[in-house]
Length: 358
Image 1 (cartoon, rainbow, N blue to C red):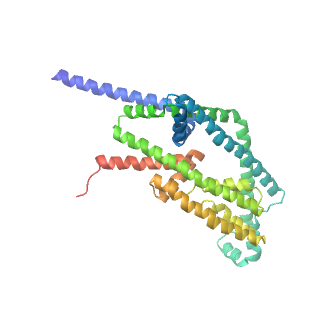
Image 2: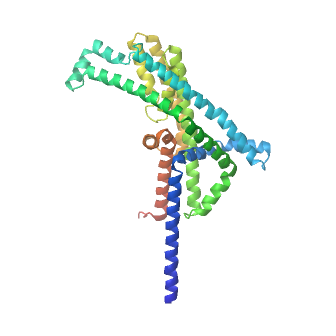
Image 3: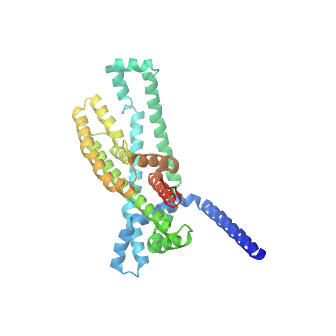
């Protein structure tokens, strides 16, 4: 009996030591590949998004030519996703630089709204003064913000150019991983489910939830944001606003947020045009922004994002903002995905271990 207890104790000790070693090796491994974690994540997300395209190509080539189908899919992703976004990035930096040069040269006045309020709305400026808000201070801060933003964009452009080799390596690694995730994705997921000791039912639910939310967030949110940004950029070009590509991209990024969105850009633009006397252009922006751009958001976002994520808008907003602040631009996918997994884990814990009301 004593020998049996000793064997059980030794077994528990060996098992605990083994799990400690597994945790230690895993932590060291993830620490080692830390600089490439986001690259791996994007490869996983892209493989989920384009897996349907891969399966369609595979049917054409034959089920035994997975490598060829995965290679063709990666080439298409490179040509129609990565290359256009890279060219767009270079054009964006060029327009942003031109705009800030025009501001510094006095061709564009960033304080036009403040000047209008000071000249035409003295009651408003007097009221603000009572609360310690001086017009000159606001004007100075706006100018400083514009200058710092211009310097930041210039620094980002130089940093991007200086890290061109690193960027190239990251993209190459992402495509390399995307190839294997497409070709061997099913077997990789199967092995993960068989290995992780959480129970296959839970693991399949977690994998399904991750795929569902990441696909909905990237595909749905990006489609909505790019549609709004494209309409906004074309609108700004049509009414003669400088750097329409820059503002279109800005509206695209802001449209990633469930609240506010591209209106943060086109509403002030309409106000500025009205102040400058371009009433017709101002009315056009308001009409297109509220009817067409707003309609795109109200129709497409619930269909492509909200329905698949199965999360309320306030949670999507908080997780998106938190994800962007914590992970950078990639956070607009990581944030909602982590929020969905958070809900999924707590739901499973409640179902399995939670108390039941009488």
